[in-house]
Image 1 (cartoon, rainbow, N blue to C red):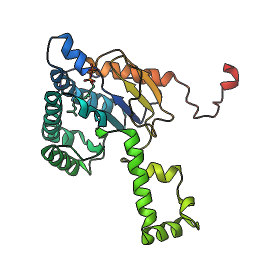
Image 2: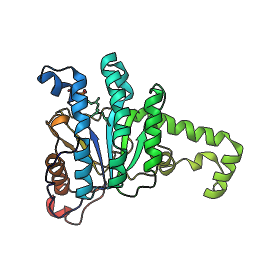
Image 3: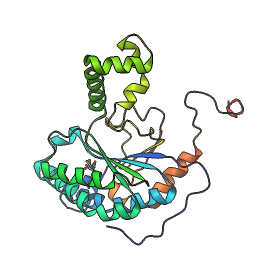
Length: 264
Ligand code: FPP
């Protein structure tokens, strides 16, 4: 649901190209109100449009949102059913908005165990928005970062065991053994969203300070920012706070900044 909020502006400065968010705290939001946990997910889904619009407004190019992890299958059936239904509805309801806002939808994660109707609507929205050129919204659904790395390694091994693919790759790379083909670049390319730039900023709501098996490869150099706000209470203003925190950080990527000698 879109609200009529006035979008705040962020101060001049670097804007993270890619923000990854763990939307934590839905269950607690509901429990605090004496509601079943799934009502927190419904509320959490209802603020997504404002968050996506805020990201567009701030000039962010990509948002990756953790919607459902590989481990979430352990949750009670009522909550799982509600989440799967919510994901399906979201894929249908948001189509006109994505088209109007030029948003391209991507989904990262494993397809197994997801209900066929959820997959069908998801695939349709991905197909429909594929040529949109504005913000890319990547939803992590049935996702786990270790599983993603396992899947990337499986793909690479499969390619190496296929003589035609292996020989073509050896020729393109100009090397003489399969081992030499495997480097950081190849592994990164075989991740689910292999063309995406790494996230610059990681945000987790709900007060916990963990990565929870999220984008472990891609977050290597991300700035981490945590807020106690529960996801259903998240607003564009809080996204702005996260971006301001990012602007105050000195990103060094393991090297030194120009003025670092002054800091020590
Ligand atoms: C964590 O909160 C959140 C999730 C497991 C699901 C996140 C899903 C949504 C925001 C809505 C669905 C998304 C779409 C795109 C329709 P929690 O339940 O673990 O919270 P708790 O820590 O308070 O228990």
